[in-house]
Length: 205
Figure 1 (cartoon, helix red, strand yellow):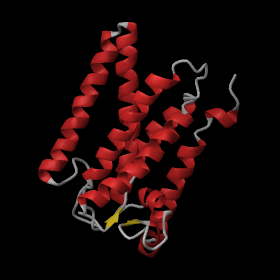
Figure 2 (figure 1 turned 90 degrees about the horizontal axis):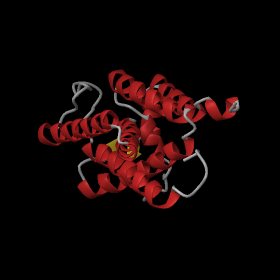
Figure 3 (figure 1 turned 90 degrees about the vertical axis):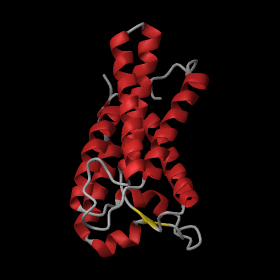
Figure 4 (figure 1 turned 135 degrees about the vertical axis):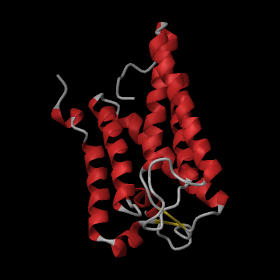
């Protein structure tokens, strides 16, 4: 029987609590921790991580937090904490790169990139499991989910607005760059695990 330390989703609960706490503290505190395009020049590298914990409105927070906490808790309870952390780290780095390359934003907030990474990671597991076990139901769910993700990102690219969060308040504008970063990070981690970790006898990844 696994210990409480391993099964309780500590990372997810901590990140969710920090996001909720920052929103409660108000705009001044959010401005201190949000991602900024000049973070490197200002030696405020922590913004690359803390920007994901900030949100433009309560509506924005509720949507992001619900998805992130649900998926994150699932990973940790299943013993996949390291896998989750790798995806979050990759998303953090790629989000910064993509936002700088697009040059569309001076500021960024939101957990949605992290949430999408966790969702794509789950889809990759479903597709791989379906192929390896000949489970057509699992494979179909994974492929359908992948098409839904592509459709969502395509919708956001085409219309410049989120499918779920209202853009009417708090200065929110959908940053497709973060969603692309999350999807790519999860896909790269899935490929890495498939190529290099299959021979490692551990369930931690």
